View 1 (tube, rainbow, N blue to C red):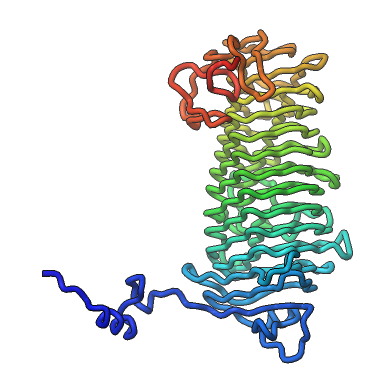
View 2 (cartoon, helix red, strand yellow):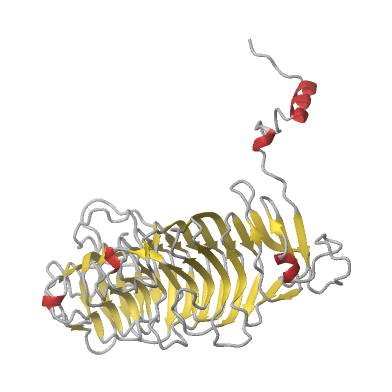
Length: 509
């Protein structure tokens, strides 16, 4: 027989700590936390951190230790100057939240005024940072960041959410070091205790006018055979310990001196639905839109990247040294002076298992694809569509292998559409035996390498990258296993011979 609790009995049990409304014990209920307010334009007299008497400086906010469920809120329309470096941690069920309050039309603004970091979250975890405006323009050229997450001999740090920020005018220098200059910098440092992030979500942020990096990862625990001698073991001495559970999504990045996003020492990261517009604009060093270094199993998908400012790299995408199993899919790349894709092992490193599929590229040049010297193993570039009209690349594939005796390449370019509406064809530089082509469509291009199964007739490529009715590229590709299951437009891939190019549907009238 079931026994029902009366309302009075249920209330008594709840009051005694036996039950909560959700049916959990009181000991399991998330702590309520405390709320602290900061208004740097308020009268400092009697400041307690309450809404009526808020703190009026970052020094006061930094002097407190925060715990699970706590909230540190900055008043909209006010500006605080210096570095916010809070201490304490949240918990899995009750993160520590830094955000805004009030109804003012302008964001709460933190201005680093030339400090190394505007927001520094060091040796902490379960922190949510949201909705603030962050800038750091004073004393330009010195090393600085907008937001820096830093672990130093900490171990695993979990539960970060960096979202809804407006980060702009971070006027740092041209640094690619452990510290660096970035809008958002994810730093793992130290030598004594392996450290990494597990659960890091960077989403919905707007980043503009940054020198040099947009979103940048770096770790001293990154040593493994795959990286060769690309890194000084005295500077990066720790065994490879990747950050996990990383997602970077729905961010907009504009006017960057250097890289858009660089992932380093991660495993299983996903980079999706971002817009990068204008990178490699003010840096003499090599930079790319979105690239990986010393990573495993990265997926880069549904991004739009444009405006690469010069040809010192300047590509949308790059699988760099020690990148393993990187997949670039369903991305739109256009108007990049450097090109579409770089695959670049060097200095003893290897790049393994790169896949670029069902992407579209419009008016990317000086080369569409570039291979650096060094081992490029198990790499497949298939079912992409390249269309050039305004910019005509000097190289369809720029192969910088040097000589076949010193380079091992396993790189297949298959089922791609290449259309040129300009004068002249694309060239190939130093093509090595390991670089092969088949079932590609080359139109308006003088092809100088074997292309079995390929076509040279007009593929009837439409302005929207679909194929016109009667296109010879329809159902003319080679069958590829483990092909991702859908095309650039979201169409499901059907059994049998696929179309050539990034469109898998029927011919369009």
